[in-house]
Length: 398
Ligand code: ATP
Ligand code: MG
Image (tube, rainbow, N blue to C red; front, top):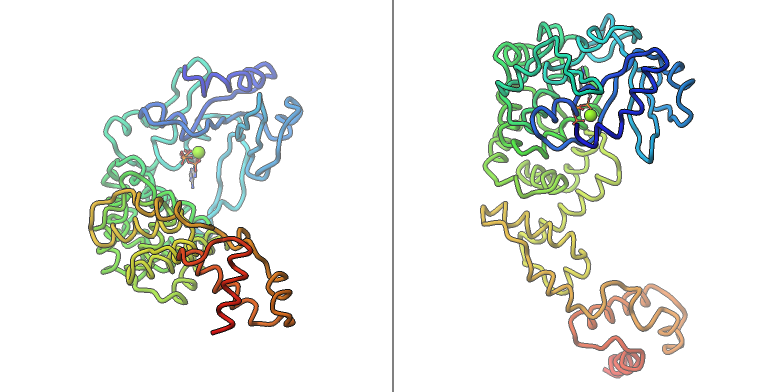
């Protein structure tokens, strides 16, 4: 058994010793069978959160109402979830109540896709009542049970189907896809935050181009912020070599193909309820990318953008122009040649200039600091107190 599972076996054993069942489930088992890298292992158990907390001393409550707690073991955190069934969905998004149950099979039955409904015991034996292995062999994404019902219960599963398409390259099983197209409109009832999690994963998968194409073919895009009625732009987006772009870079390309002004871009990202940190990063990169489209980076621009942003903007420029994507070494060189990389490194500060000029502080001071900064970046002036003083003196004489 792989070390990542092995390390978690003591948790399973402890639960079993206390008279409960516990199995590896979900993405980790799926990825093991596919041969993909395993991010983290999830465990399902017949013990309720209260019962688990009586057994383990180090736990963190992360979603007790859904039956999930974190168990800390040898420096790692494991998500352990009580077997549960989800009863009566009245609004297409969340079960009205979560019922803890004692049988594994019922827990596997409430899971979204057959490939995600396989359990594995501590010896590596698989429990696969919904033929998940068969789906993995056929490289297909297939709901557990009636697709229409499962999408009625939780419409987010349709987005999840496409993000798995993007990550695994599997095809959507015929009936699953038929139901997805039919039920696409239900996605409008799902919280934006949940859609964003899946959409971000979709944007980063190896098969993102296929998934984006399918997103549009299925009309799911109509029920996502920013993307409805953007058919032409979405078709354009998938013609670019997206593979080489990071998540923020893809968002920027998206804004560009939508021909958004900076204001529209901001509103668009707000519609996704993105965190302000992510939004800031994307909008900043969008600005620098637009500038790059009109003019190559130079000493002054790279000083203000910073190296990381400049490299991203350059990559985007290559992608947008369908050029070969190469790491822009010339920008690193340009950046390394800068005499200073931030204003903090200036050999003078506002006080020096006030003392020399014998004037009281005012808006003029900021202008002068900017001028000094620019002259140093352009190599016209050395970053040295005496030289700067001399330079200012000469300016004043003029
Ligand atoms: P990843 O590797 O991206 O974490 P994952 O399959 O583990 O993939 P999670 O979102 O972590 O995906 O969910 C863990 C498991 O919980 C899934 O494998 C699936 O069995 C179940 N699950 C998650 N979301 C849903 C849902 N909306 N409906 C039904 N089952 C779900
Ligand atoms: Mg997971």
